[in-house]
Length: 96
Image (cartoon, rainbow, N blue to C red; front, side, top):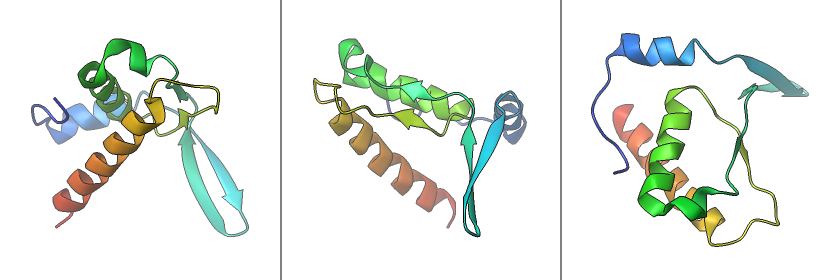
């Protein structure tokens, strides 16, 4: 399941407050990256639905950086790409 129960804003804030971020700047453009990075090399071993759930949980806890080393196999990049596309549509609908 890609998106499950709705959480209260307090629940979301509590989870995100556990994560610390580093700021990376290039000229005037700065971005915040979670200090923890989720490696996706094992995602394919858990099945697509479980992989999507793990990605959702990572974001719920504030992770916004993913390791996509070129040596990974088994369609992992496809799973991550489909999830990123779905979550961006979901986020853009929430902002309307």
